[in-house]
Image (tube, rainbow, N blue to C red):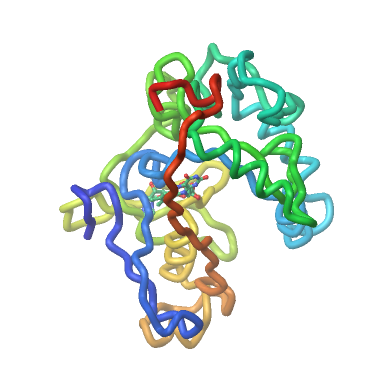
Length: 283
Ligand SMILES: Cc1cc2nc3c(=O)[nH]c(=O)nc-3n(C[C@H](O)[C@H](O)[C@H](O)COP(=O)(O)OP(=O)(O)OC[C@H]3O[C@@H](n4cnc5c(N)ncnc54)[C@H](O)[C@@H]3O)c2cc1C
């Protein structure tokens, strides 16, 4: 079931004991491009330590640690620098070693906006003044702290730059198919090897098995990836047994430890005069 005209799954969290047992809407994009089609377009990277922890989990000789991933980030995301008129006192710094600068091919773009909102300059100054707050040279350099971020917009058109525009629209590759309105029900295994997936088109009564020549890559997001694993028999045995799913692998962590970020809106009134270049008179 979806809400908002079909673009979002309709998911409500279980009660959070640490938050007076309140429940929350959990937004996930239900559309080609997934949540990148509906998100706030704030372009941010995680911090290096988090990627390194992934790497540790993946084991020796893995390619998931920060130092390995940076090359892919550079390949996959093209940065549009801020306008040259942005004055130095704004401290809007960036470092191209963390970004690509190829604007000609299919890509995902991270773009500094033409104008920055009036409150940003004093807010940045104030945050910088807090002892212990790191000011990152670039929002994508893997440090924690404060930094300016970009939006995921195409600098040529101003339109949203996301998984569909970057990795599907206009591509014509015989080995790349997209099946919209089609649900993956489970992974098909031969022994311990994933050899395909069972899929059902929306509204259909029967499912189809698609087999893999090489491998199955599961990337259904933080909520549905573990769901598909559980439906395929990989997850906590007691839960699977209660759902009458034959247990292939008893893996208690699948479907647990979900983390999301908190979020709050801050409103403020700005009093002129604003920064003359960052906040031109139209603000
Ligand atoms: C409202 C909102 C605002 C956000 N704002 C920001 C922001 O400003 N900046 C930022 O960096 N991040 C933001 N995010 C988070 C960001 O969009 C996600 O972290 C990111 O898109 C996750 O990518 P993903 O590929 O892991 O999963 P997703 O983007 O969720 O993609 C998973 C895809 O798998 C599909 N799928 C799921 N189950 C199945 C199934 N059984 N069969 C077939 N397909 C399936 C889904 O429909 C979806 O298309 C926001 C997210 C939301 C929802």
